[in-house]
Image 1 (cartoon, one colour):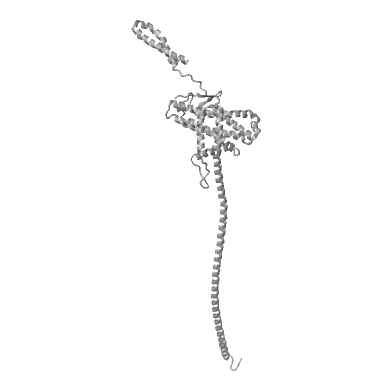
Image 2 (cartoon, rainbow over the protein chains, first blue to last red):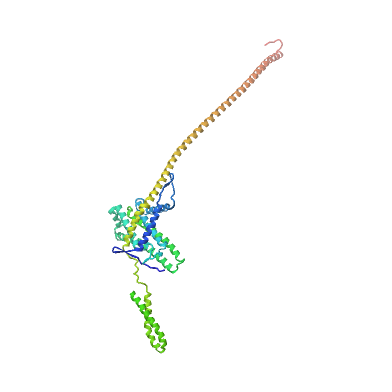
Length: 239
Length: 207
């Protein structure tokens, strides 16, 4: 087996190129999330039978657990007041990144051969991670401006005016760090596993694969938490 | 480049075959073989070079990790569509279910708390009844006690009266006997005094 880095299956649309392998795997990720969603929200019942509220079962339990988890994350980061309207955004961030990372690690994509490049987690492509990071930036700007209007820009000179360049720099480093953190983690893990598998295909890569599962789940959580934290920072009242 | 590379092995192959035949021919003409050897070097070298070139990998594009293109907005668009979908079909309905269950449990809890006050009311009522019953019972006990005490007092009084009466009777009897005895004494005293006077006084004097 060989390890190839940076090879893409180019598609052309209009005058522009696309990375076909990223789109294919992202469609599969979206399909997985969609299936879980549709199966887990059938016959939602807070009550069953008589008038007793019952504990949920099966997939509904899973979807409720995830919803509660995201709600709790949003409430912790954003605060009691506005958190509910940001739950879909943070939830989608978390689910998309989590399912992407784990699909890249668990599904045997190499079975399907592409003309160029190979299928892998969609988050190993810089375009995906930068897209998510830019959406997060737009989200926290939107949150701040929709809540405070133009007074939002006062935060650039708080707590002191000489911090203005640093605050502006922060607005550039936030999406940069978000995107590169995720991209680096996922790509590096794939490369390490790929190299190990090409050297010793049997038992040896397994610990790295398990570590990869763990860290990729953590990266999903970290991305969602930081997105929540940035939104929370934007909407919070003056300290 | 590739066509050339493919042409070369063919040409080199034929050249090599011819070159391979030549040693056979040259083996027959042994004396001339030594002179022909340097002539074989060139085709052999050509063959080797051709094989090396043919084994190089096919032309690959340079690997690009930081390759930004239309994929980025497409992924952003996909993400936004997924977000709208999940809001409508997952976080919305499931969130509503969670809130409904929460509200229901809170209502039940509040109901139970209200029941607590009703229970307290019932408890007060029960205590009142108990205290009333206790008072009634105590009253009855007191009445019974009083009745018994009255009876005892009556009997005691009767007994006392009887004893008093007997005592009075005994006293009266004693008094009567004492009176009788005093009277008897009186007459005895008279007779004695007359006797004494008779003895003491000379005869014939009367008091």
